[in-house]
Length: 573
Image (spheres, one colour):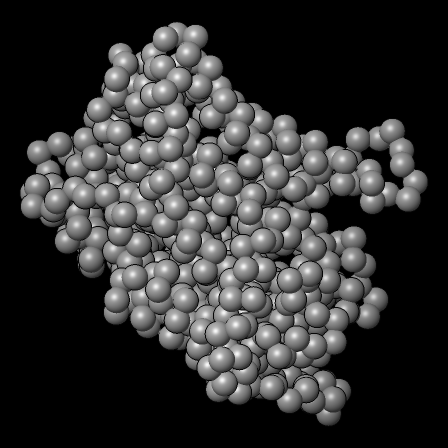
């Protein structure tokens, strides 16, 4: 292991940003302070050099990144589309359409959850579409915006990470393939097989998805969320949009309510995104093939190779164009009113974009990447990058390495080091810490997956013969370790105030960002704790994942029943 250039100091910038965000509740300012702190470290304490790097190395290159610009554009266009839909009466019409299904607080929560499962192919689309669309419905049913943000956030990343057809799958499979490439004798083409086989072991993602309907059906909440729900039901909470929320820019529609005005542009957006994912994925696979054939690649490969940011941007643009054409042809709005509503929607998402920009800059600072990509030499970019993840990973995982002498011993049930049994738990916690501190689940996966695969493969041989399999790659411990990287990254992402999906969830739902973080965290920690106690720990001792998921479900119901309290409401059940 190479000597880390900054050691424990590499943890300081994300810690500064997280602590300041929790204390001041000003996410953008806290992120900027974290970035400047990191620039000071990389410049040896020189404030002038730090100020130059603050702008020229961290802020401006991140802003100019094409992928980020497309996400910013997507957010602006979605804000504009939601603004026009609201002004034209479409949002009110959609509420009236859903009202017979979602007449109660319970029905509203379950409806939001089920719609979140439907938009499974991309976490950004899920968050922005559902948050902006369903907020008025939840307001009417007296469901707090904190609860709406929690439901949206809990169906975005977990669903996208589990789905076999999503914008996440290529990234996840590629990281697994990188790890397989470092294992002697392993076939890189088995990455997809391991991805699918690891799905039942992703306990946190499964629990996060399952906790939402359990809370809704039992009508219980706890912690800060309970206070938020009681305040809304009692009418004591002022319903004021967070300054950076993707909320309705104009609350009073100027046209008669019609659900089609809302559904058609949203459907066009979804259809366009899916079509563009297919088109860009197919083009990417064909351009990368040395021997083009007429055969159509598998759909999972197509989605995996797709340019998701491009698809999202132009899908949102088509959706905005659709609602504009509808409003003009049906004479719902004038061109001037469409411009006003679009601009109003864009203005209120600008703070969200600033937070996303600064969070991305901090994530890049703490990584080992240049603007052009991953470094090929150890600490190649140490003048501008902190390599925070590498330091944490090497510090923790180095204790799990097995010496050649120990590896040569004949394994028995009593000689297996406990660290081998606990490897899924260690990796899950490490992934959560890295994702929490850096605000990026993808970055965490990319850092840990190759490292943990190469670490775990030789350790499988230390397990007793009666529980070992002939194939080390499909051994439950290996699959659980792969799953721990993927689900642990989502867990940390859910708890982090500097995560892009957490930021988008709060802004899309019209909820104060830190309120969302503080109300969601107890639920995320509950699911994460159960995932460890009844998941990653017993899996190391050979307990079947099927039994563990049933036990986890019972534990989750028990915790909600014991800790949770009912929220009295004249509109519920």
